[in-house]
Each structure stands twice: as structure tokens, then as C-alpha cells.
Image 1: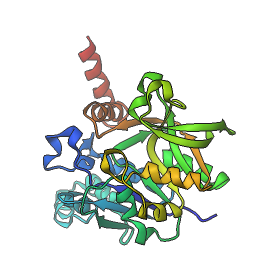
Image 2: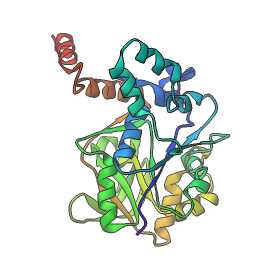
Image 3: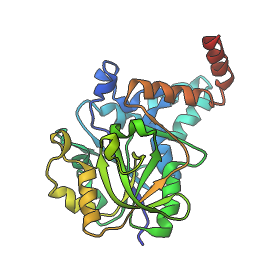
Image 4: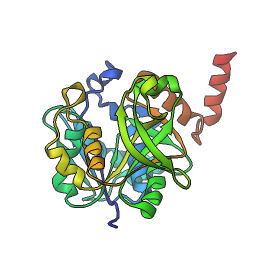
Length: 291
């Protein structure tokens, strides 16, 4: 079983659900307390042992590449003013040279197409996909939990969590074959936004995947699906039909959809309430608002 060392993060989307804020600022760079939403997802990948991250970018996303570059003038100014704590934090967050790649997706043709754009870097290795507008907060990162499961069963693993029955039509959900030990669930299929009465489960797909490289070959020939785009879900379903093993993983944690206005607000609030510097003040503000 090959280890998972590469992660793909598609960051080329327009962020239409949070316009007008994303007219000039990539949605992935919107701050959640004191750092961009994207930083939380990168930290999750690094915690899980990922050695190389491939960002699939698009036009007007240069701020993402700049963020992960050295800010020499800023760091020098902070050092000169003896603001060493902040300067050290910036240096700590800076990635090691050669551990990130930026690949341009010239046209918005769907999540599956975005992932396929990383094919030459992924090669014949298993890889992770992390959707950067989904932050998952937990004691242990979601991908780290998945890596532990991957070391036991291999194959392809999709992160899921249970949602109320009334919400299943908003998401892609899995068709379970049976619960294994712990959080692993054997899968028989996936359904995109089913009607409530047709939903095979209440387990929604949550934006974290560990995939085998044969998915890239299927994406190369994948027809357009929902929304006239090349969908990753469709290629995964084909891989499953051809016998590639798939498991769902019910992770421990809470996910926040930062691509929506309410989800972004929830993420900011949740992280503010546990932030070591401002948690007390944030709780006081919440109490005052409820009074």
C-alpha cells in the first residue's frame, strides 16, 4: 500500500455564494479570526503528513500564491519594530520551498476537471483532495483520522457526516453497504442531491477524499454531469462500479461551509470562541447579544 503524500486543493472557483466580498478577494482568503480559511485546511493536510500540496488556481487568484510566499519587507519591518512574535508566526506558516505547486485551470469545468488538472504531479500515487471552502474543526484533523483508516483498509476513502433527514437533498450522500468496526462504512454507491424519500442514507459527503490514481484516468474520459460540468462524484462512481474499493469514514468533528454566508459566519464564531487570545471576549459579546 503506497502512502498518501500529495494533496490537491481546488481553489479556482468564483465564490459566487459570498459575493460581493469575493469580487476582488478569493473566497479561500477570507479571514476566519486571524488567518485565511485556506490556512486551516493547509494545516489539516500538513498535520496528516502531506508532503506536497497542489493548488488548482484560476484567474484573479494570485493572492493565494502570494500568501504562501516570503513577505520579506513585512517580516523585516516587524523585526525592526521588535514585533518578533508576529514575525515568527509568519515565518512558521511559510511552507518549505518546493512543497507547493500551483496549476492553472483555464476554464471552470467542474470539480472533477480541477482535480484532473493535477494529474501530471500526482502521477501513479494515491492522493488526497481537500475542498478549501470546508473547514473541519476537531481535536484531530479529519484527514489525519482518514489516514489512520487508510492504513488499515487502503483503497478510496470519503469523509462523511450525518445530517438531518430534511437536509439530505442539499448534498451528495452515500449508499452504505454496512457499518464496519468504528467509523468505517462499506459503500455501494453515491447519490447527488437525492429527494428525501429516495435518499439511501443521511451520510453526506463532506469535502475530504483519499483516492487512488485510477480516478485520474476516469476523469480524463468523464462526460459532463450535473450543471454541465465534469463531476468528481461521477468518476468515483465509475471507479466503484469497476471494482475499486470505497469506504466512507464518519469523522469526529464539525464542518463549516465557508463558501456560504451563514457557514462562514458559523466558522468565524466557532473559532473565535476557542481562540486563545480572544475567546473570553468573544463569549462576552455572544452573551451581550443574547441579553
